Image (cartoon, rainbow, N blue to C red; front, side, top):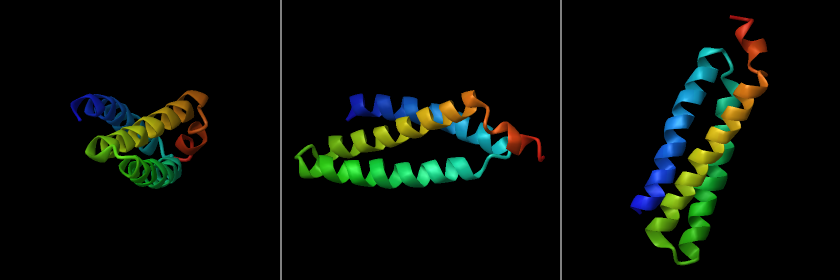
Length: 91
């Protein structure tokens, strides 16, 4: 569980910074939509599959880590592409 938690916390810390940066720039919908998709697909879906495969608690933590890392990668791509700038110009 501790090894899975390293991945989870690396994704979570990056995710917290990037999501709040996008929100501060006025881009609120993208973090919401990617969060909804990622939480249901990875946190719930992947965790359920991992438990069914016999991974138990470690599988749940892997699913949570996948969720955080997917959101971090998605928001990083959004930030680097600069598509959030049009929302910042409205503020």
